Each structure stands twice: as structure tokens, then as C-alpha cells.
Image (cartoon, rainbow, N blue to C red; front, side, top):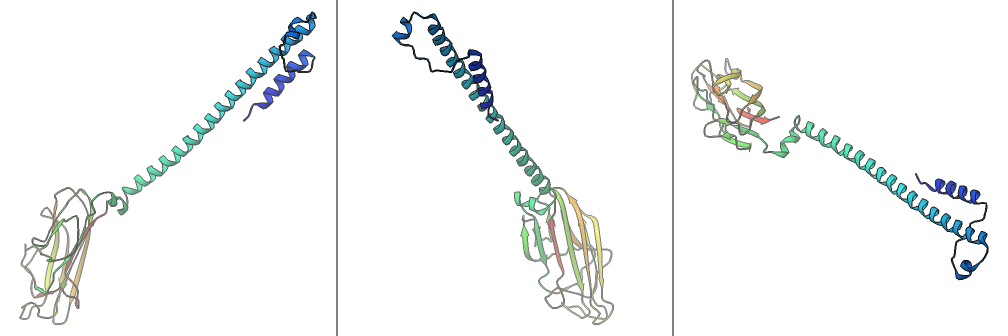
Amino acid sequence: MEYTLSLFVFVTFVLIFDGNNYVEPVLTSSNLTTDREGDLNKILINQDLTQKIQLAQNVIKVMNDVQKLKNDVQRLETENSHLKAEIDYKTNSCTRTLECLDQKTRVAFYAYYSNNFKALTTGTTLVFDSVITNLGNGYHNRTGIFTTPSSGVYAFTWTVNAAGLHVAGSSGNEYGEMNASIKQNGVTRGSIKADSERKNDDDSATGFVVLSLSLGDKIKIVSDKFNGQGGMYSDDEYGRTSFSGFQIA
């Protein structure tokens, strides 16, 4: 808001009060030597009016500058509020989505048996030797164990395929059958079973769990409950026996 109206009112008031037209005061020797007191008074009044007008102009300029500064402050406060809201939104979203993992080491792995194999005896860890993905280097294909590289919430899935044929050196009347449990530091967190009862009766089972893990926790898939029998598929024709996981929060 400009304050030119105030200046107009102020100047008008002074001119009306003086009762004379405003004339820019000029002090010369002829002015000072006049013997008319009225002329001298008029000069002094005009000079005083000039000073008041100048003062009013200065005050109005300062007031306008202050108003502009207030407007700038208000604009910056609004922009700051919007930026803060955007930062808060992105921060909160980060804690709930995979996008957050861009800011730290991503953790994800996928591995499978490279060949068909005989069903394992109880207590034996499945070692998925062929590694396709291993972000964060948490999975070890020589031990079959995933070691948590950072604390958080993880999802895991594993699949076993029981063969209805004799594969990987299996023989006799028994065909593929095996239980596979997921263990967190030795504690069972989930279990599946694939069982082929007769010839050509293939079977497959898949498990899925979501676990809250601490740094250094050990996750593995173990043949559990009973000794497996027959053979297990892991190829591109009948399906891969596999293990995978990723961090979700």
C-alpha cells in the first residue's frame, strides 16, 4: 500500500491553512532587504512548508519501504512453509516405501539350485548355489545363509519342487518329498512341504514370510521334520527350487 494520499492530505491542509498558493521559496538579497514584514513572513512560511513537505515525503518513503519488507517476509514465510511440508512428506514417505532405500544400501537377493538334486535329510541346510541378485551381499552361496546387513523389515519367499520321476540319482518306489522350513537364528518362522506320491505326480510348494530383523540375524532354509525322499527338480523345464528376499522398510 502506498502512502501518497496521506501526503496529498497533509500538503492540502497546510496550503488551506496558509491561505496562499505555494511558491518555492528563494532567499535573495532583494527578499532580505524588503521593508515589508508581510513579505518576510510569507517567505518564512513557505520555507517552513517546504521542510514539512520534504519531511512528509521522507516519512512516506520509509513507510512504503517497511511495507515492502513486510510483504517480502510474508512471502518468504509462505515459501518456507511449503518447503517444510514437502520435506516432511518426502521424509514420511521414505520410511514407508522402497524409495527410501535409495538413500542407503539396498538389500535384495535371489538364488536357486543350478541342478536337480536328491531330497535332503532332516536338519540339512539347502544351499542355493546359483546367485542371480545379491544387493547388499547378504546371501552366501556356499552356506545357503542370508546374514542381515542392516536392521529392518524383510520379506522372504522360497520354493521346492518334488519330482515325480527319478532324478539326480534317485531310485526305487519313492518319489520326491521334502519339508522346507525357514529359520531365523535357528527358530522356525515358516514351513512348506512338497510331496510326489507316485510316478509323474510332480508337486511344488512356495512359502512367504515377513520378518523384523536385527543386524547380523541369520536366515536359512532347512530340510525339516523328516528325511526327504526321492529327487527334487530345479531346472527351467519343471521349475527352480529357489530362495529370495528383500528389505521393505
